[in-house]
Length: 321
Image (cartoon, rainbow, N blue to C red; front, side, top):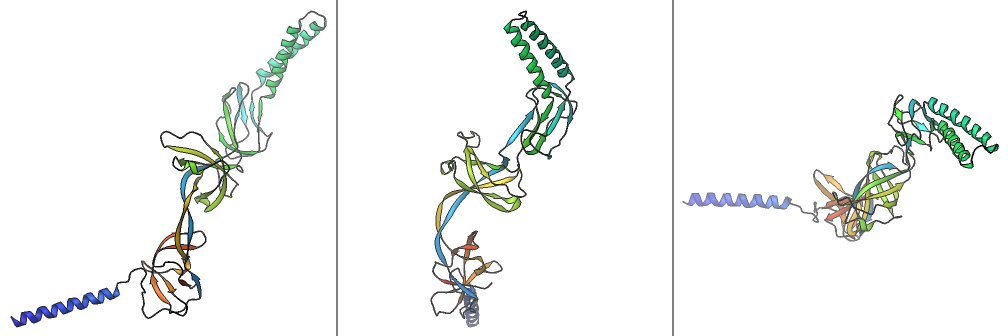
């Protein structure tokens, strides 16, 4: 019996000793990780407390602000198309040639009729109305002959080619689509609860992940009705051209929603050991440096990081770069 009691006492002592060891090794955010102190850092900065802006994002697509459909103005068979998708063009460059033989024959006929009626009119053998009709027909036929060559209406790039030689063209049929790659905008879908924060002429930031760039744009249009399916509004934001950015690419519109107060330090001040994060901190002048576990949050464009726990703001933090 005494031996059993002694055995239980020994086991209990071992368990308590082990618990004490493990409890000593447990360090929570805000407590010193090494009570003996840490080496002095290369430089010091304050753990700054202040307001940072908040924002939400709206997904969008880059489009050209200047997009023009090139269509025929007269009917005719397409003889040739001088460009393909991606071809650069200048205003006035010939793009499409139509078969103009029928139009040329009609012009010759209209011209002959006009000359005949003009002669009769001078002899008082044709009325003013007949003269005006013949002249109008002549001018219309003359203009139609000029429409057999379709020229570029602006400087730009061919975005789409929707016809081929041999196809029949007619008034209103789109043959080519041109756009100006230097005139870009982001067309974003903004949720209805955010639309009140956006106004025409406002400056907003745009993230372009494909080129890892953030640019500033100007709100050009806020379409006045929401999509009944997505409950979102379409917003057009114009921005200056960026190398490597083309119509059809992905973008994110950043919409300011307010601000919040945070504590932040330079990202270089945060030391990482495995999954642990810590900083070297001195709570008052003359005090020793100590390592303190922290939890980080958002990262900011100025190279700082938010401290969610472990610092209250105002402490002196060391940076070793």
